[in-house]
Image 1 (cartoon, rainbow, N blue to C red):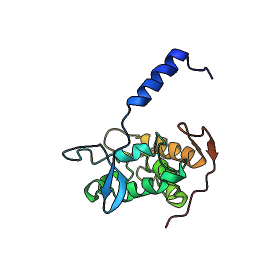
Image 2 (image 1 turned 90 degrees about the vertical axis):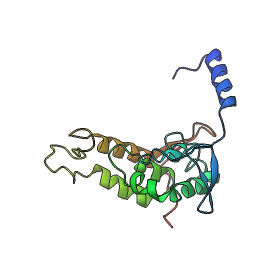
Image 3 (image 1 turned 120 degrees about the horizontal axis):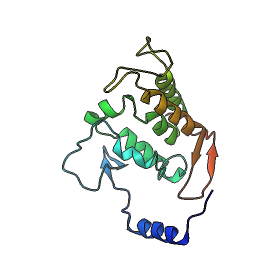
Length: 175
């Protein structure tokens, strides 16, 4: 792996200094990550935007045990009008990876089996080719996001803290 040049490293350190804190606030009486520091309305009901801090960025969650409850509370307090869409794990959605990042292995397994099963398009030639969905057939996003989630279940790296790679992290059982 090529090391960063001193100039690139300095630029990244400058950027790191100006990045805002992860926005948090109270939702349903629990401290949760918010989609943004301020907003007039939550416009994207299909994406659990606040979960990006769990995956793919791993700023909270399984690799940082002190933040695991914050990550879980964030998922559990997504407003109902958004949750009915963004928690259904449609096509490209990363809910398998999110469940792995929340250290909920049983739920991650359930989502992974759903994602990798060819139950929506039995006429497709290969498993995990669902569709037609919102855009095309075969919609390989189902299988792709399912495989990404399985990778997250097997391995989680902490790029911001200790630099460790956690293999087969057992997590904690669902409550």
